[in-house]
Amino acid sequence: MMKRIFGFALLIFGISAKAITPFEGEKLEFGLGITPSMSWMSPNTKMLVGGTSSLKFGFGAKINYHMSEKYALGFEINLQNLSAHTHLNAVAVDFKNSIKNSADFNMDYQLRYLDIPIMLKMNTIPNNNLAFYGEFGGNMGFLLNQLADIQSDVLNLSQVNMDAPEEGDNFTLRNIDNNNTQYDYSLNKLRAGLIFGAGVHYHLGNESKCEIGIRYNLGLSDLYSESKWNGSSQSIGLNIGFIF
Image (cartoon, rainbow, N blue to C red; front, side, top):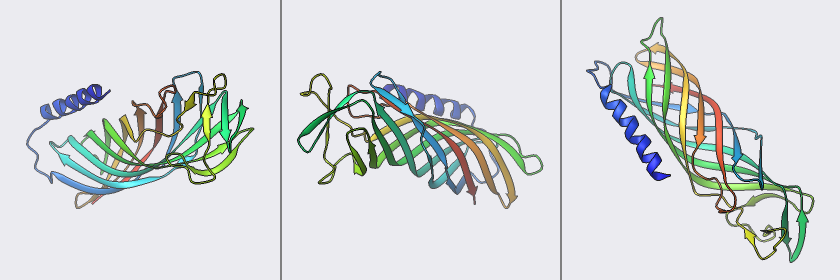
């Protein structure tokens, strides 16, 4: 996985190097942005079933380094809230020393990440203060918080810290055919992905501009700590920003 991410990073910087031409304007731009988005989990194993998730918001800072009039490297630091619905087809639930089989076990994760995207940004020459842009690159997310609401036919809990459950929230998921096999329901601390986006810039004068676009984040890494489960996180949303 890391080799693929490293290779993609080299590709971005290789393309960027070819795009460098003399640039007369300000090379560095700073801005702020918000990112309302919808996220979902894409399962890769039969035991897991993904589902739709609610709208979440994120915000952060932007830095663009212009290499030419049309090309720039974009760096961001975002505090991003995401959600991930996970449904298990059949699992045994061990809660307060009582094991019950569940055919309808749902975990609605509420996640907070520190996202660091690095992108190649391309834009057209402004016409009547309007320009179009495209962007693609990589993203590394660091999981800061993971809470989940548990809804099932045998157990219901709210706001469970899935990494370190508090007293009264402790439960264990086991194999329905072999109760000696336990499952880890916490999530991985790192999330790698690819970013694809496009939108418009509206130039306001004094080199300030507003931007609005659509951004898709394709998850590459496994979302779950449990080796027997496999699934990646995907999201799509708006990229709304202001460049000072």
